[in-house]
Amino acid sequence: MSRRPPLLAIAALFLLLVGCSENDRPLESPVQLEGAIFGSFYQVTIADSLTQGDAQRLEEGLLEVLEDVNAAMSIYREDSELMAFNHSPVGEWQPLSDELIEVLAISRSVAEASNGAFDVTIGGLVNLWSFGSEARPREIPDEQTLNERLAEVGPDSIEVDESGLQARRLRDIFVDLGGVAKGHGTDRVGAYLDGQGIEHYLVNLGGDLIVRGYRDTESQPWRIGIEAPFVERQEAQHILPLDMISVATSGDYRNYFEEDGRRYSHTLDPRTGRPIDHRLASVTVAHPSNAWADAWATALMVLGEEEGMVLARNQDLKVLMLIREEDGWASVATPAFADHFGQSRMDEMEIEVR
Image 1: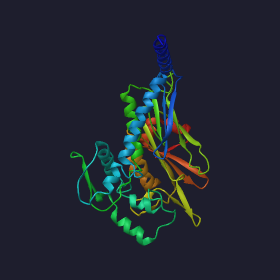
Image 2: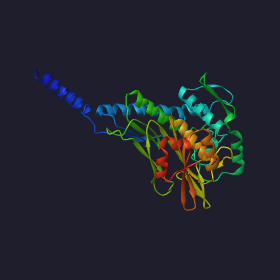
Image 3: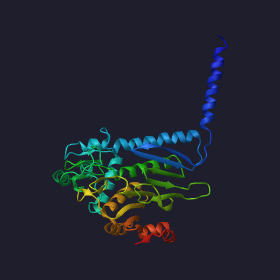
């Protein structure tokens, strides 16, 4: 009996040393952390020198950040802060978190600048067209119900008091932040990594991207692909180097349903209550904030190639559009996009600058 305590102590010390050794093990760069979130995926690539313990700690932290965003802005969780707001009495002010107020304020700004092409109050219409949280069968809604829900929506149906951290619904609308919340989550993950001292990373949250630093020790920039609008496969149409910026893309060629030979996009025009129907296949916006990029990409996608390009130029936005043509598609960029990525690169990729 006298020998057992020392043996147990030695075994415990051995396990502790093995655990410490594993946590201290350097990982080959870049390190990739990935998984499922928001009904989509997250993929975080880090080029800093990390140990196994560092990587585990960072992933635990970023998952906490994403869970916070989900708990605040999900329409698929009845216990989320947003759903509590959606169920709140009409006309009564509701205290909201800094994050939710910020996203509502961004949404209001883009809604005003786009004359209502971006509108987070269209959740009822999104549900009606079978693209929301109601899990309705995918079918064309009847005219009466469509008009009833359309009459309720509009940027003026919600009031936001930024300084007081409160908001209220002025009509019985359903707020859906699908066009901006993922971008906000991307920003939050980037801010978390910044706070942890990570200098070189690429965050990909369901296709919304933000980068810092470089992808390797040779100071090579991160490169991302702008997807060609193929329905049946994924293929990059353009490859862009990114540095200290974020990118969001909105397209109409992935989420849709068909009826009587016609395709109905998940992107709705808040002004008509109907799916968009024009030649614009996708919009990519580069912006310091992914939340802003996300919202602007949705707004421009709704407006279409002509009206959207005019607004993008007027707002000095960095925008790339892929426009359907009879024999394929054309790539068109704003002057701000060309200035940022270089006119020579536009020429190489056969991107027209308008």
